[in-house]
Structure formats: structure tokens, C-alpha cells
Image (tube, rainbow, N blue to C red; front, side, top):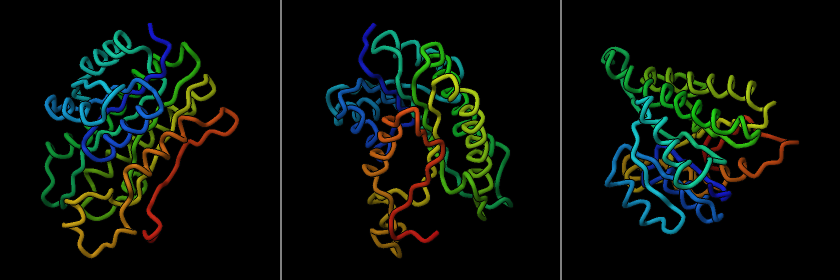
Length: 235
């Protein structure tokens, strides 16, 4: 099995997921980028370039997540960093929210985070090393109006990350939770949020650099929770 550093990035689209793939691949790591959409993930792997390998997986499917980790370990090697970035974004009034919508959001964000985090922990703990990063949001710490579905899922993911960190960090596995406190810049969002200037959008490449720095941290000074926002975002 290869001794090369291996990254698994789950929940990859053209924004932050692709930026994370580019950053870790640029460091010479073998990068597995993962999405439910087979065609899109193959196109993104081609666009990112060498060291990037596409995988298809539904994070809400326990067996599929277990199979993903077996396939990556078999072809690339054991993961040294795993990032759960699956979104499940849902904004809706509580008056109009449905059981199905609430559950779908929770399954993608929280249950999927559990499946991915557990698989990563089972791979890393016997080796006594590795990094697991969960992507959070403002909704991880504040349940704003219309965000009941999303915030419930993100609160749960944050609790999972805290519990995992307290259990696994003494065993050598670094667990981090990153709160993204603003929208990530894209042409679509700039058109939708026309009242915002560029100083109020997070930059996907800058976020990915912060994730990579978490991965590089020495054991003597590990970050568990990091909040990121652009310089123009009030808080």
C-alpha cells in the first residue's frame, strides 16, 4: 500500500469542494474527491488535474460510505486527512417545513457526518495519526429565522465533532470543526445578493488554505474550532 499522504474530501462541488481538492493535490497528496453526481465529479477531477481521483458516494448510505473508504484505501492508501463538506442546505419557514425536508437535511449534514467521521476514525485510530475536518456554518451556533432545518443538522454535526475530538485527540487523531460565517463567493450568489460587496464573500481558495493549515498543525497546538469570515462581514 502506498505511503503517500491521502486526502478524502466528501461533498465536492465546483466551489469549496473543488478548491479543497486543488489545494491538497497541489501539496502532492493523492486526493479522493467524492460526490453523489458521477458525471460532475469526473469532470471536476479532470479539471483539477493530476493526483485527483473521482469517487461516487451517497453519504446518507452507511454501506456506501464504508465501501468508499475500502475503495480509497485499496487504490490510494489509508487517508491522512478526511473532510466532510456535504451541504444539505435548506432555508424554509417552520410553517412550511416538512418531515421529509427536515430529515433529508439532517441525513446529509449530520448522519452523513457521522458515517464519514466514524469511517475516518476507524482508519486513523490504529495508526495514531490523521486529521478529520467538518465544515460548519453560522447555523452551527445560531438558529436564525427560516434556518430551523439546517441549523438543527449543523448543531448536531458540531456536537459530533466536539465529542469525537475529546475521544480521539488523546489517541493522536486531530478533529476540527470550521464555522464558515458568510456566503462563499460565486457568480450565482453575487447575482442573488446584489447588496453585498466583494468584501463580504468568503473566498473558496482562502478557506481551503485554512483547512490545509489545520492539517499541517503540530500536536502541541491543535485547533478544534475555527471560525472564518471575510474582512467585511459584520459579526
